[in-house]
Length: 136
Image (cartoon, rainbow, N blue to C red; front, side, top):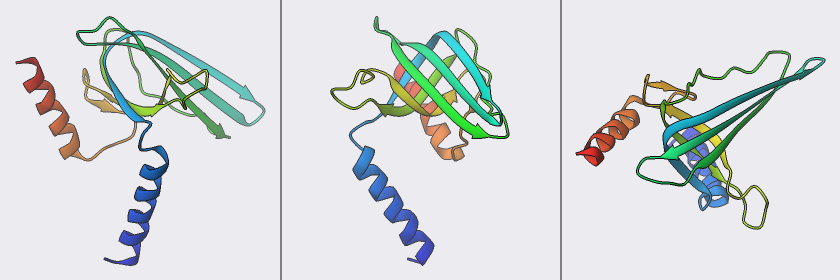
């Protein structure tokens, strides 16, 4: 293993050690989406709140995406009501008020095959294959 591989492996292991128990994902249809854009001088803030209803379930999952950026406005992918999404993120810490809210790390839009953060092609194909098997 080279130096870069060791370094990336170390970062991966430390990230999983810190957030491994909080990593989760939610898959379902979009019920509601709310986008808030705020700017103060050269500081831009984007907050997107998404409500998802998982397939074959009555409960609703609240997901929040927050992005702060200097000078340039942060971008977000177009999502409409009724789109099928797979959201990867972190659950809130235990004992906090936001423990039921999912902090978004990545969004995979299954309706139009778009991604917030690009993932390798094999991972997306595996998700689609698993989804097809689940519905049969």
